Length: 435
Image (cartoon, rainbow, N blue to C red; front, side, top):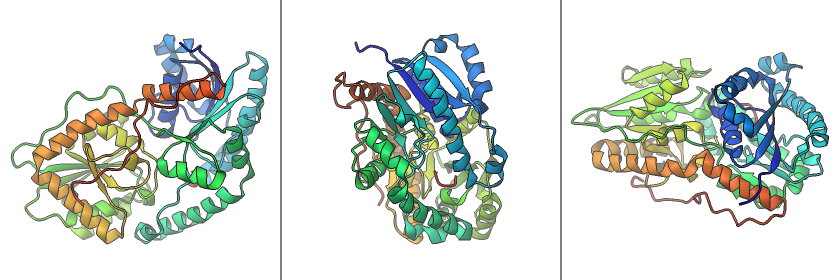
């Protein structure tokens, strides 16, 4: 058995009560603490919820020691003007580095791990320390397909076109990511297969693909069954911003034959909510849509679990927490064949739609949904496959894999990563700012 290491982890976002990136940060450090002793640098914005969880479960203190770095300077500016968010985060990373220098003297640590945020353009400063450096999962390197931008509205088109241009410039010009990638040689974790290719292309470094998110606990024991002539219950969840592209799904359900019974449950809210509701009314489908708004996470997961299929229309994302949530409840996923979720969803647990024009995407989404409505036995087979597939992506399995990376980074041996499933392609049965 390999010895427990002392690891300094930078996890700016880390919260046991939340989903998305804060939940990802908590899931990672909790799982890694079963194998190693962690000194976690995180924002003091999450202190109250972390301390409450440590009080509820004191055993966690055995492997987790939190150090809270304030992020108060210029915080209001980042709330008023989103491009300032990354700048204020950089200032936080500078403060975290100064604290890391103190911790290196006492109590000391074996290596450092840059964990969250999962963005390539801000690697922090921990790579400067004279210890091995592990970085990842890393995201943000992939551009949004240009052909999909016109369907995102003026705001979305401008945002994602600007992001594509800046992303390309940042990959070529930013000096600190280049230095951090060189320091992390052999200890780089890519969140998706596409990002692995981008890291190799722009930085000349190999990386291991381990997606950033994991299913919530517990994983459901059973899945929903659609009986008789009941409508197909479709769910969609996400922030209501242009990149989530809900109108793709709204245009798809319009194409379903009249004989197909369906209802659409929409979770979340955001700046696009009003416009999307207008789209639903214009298309004549609003009466079959239920807009649930922002629900507490347990309620949201329960609603997903009552669905028959989950539709994911994001044009830019990593793996997304909601995919794991849907699969963990035995809900087949219909999604675009790109981003991180393309490596998670297979023909055993869902349907992947090729990325094409908005019109062809809408047509193929409709084909997939209509097929699942007409073939309940096949849908149930995919539901069972979802419960099986999602068990391969638990934080515990990821922690075992990353533990191997830690020991290799220290030159202590360790076999090549073999705990996680390869992101494989499958054949379908039916054809925030700059992070």
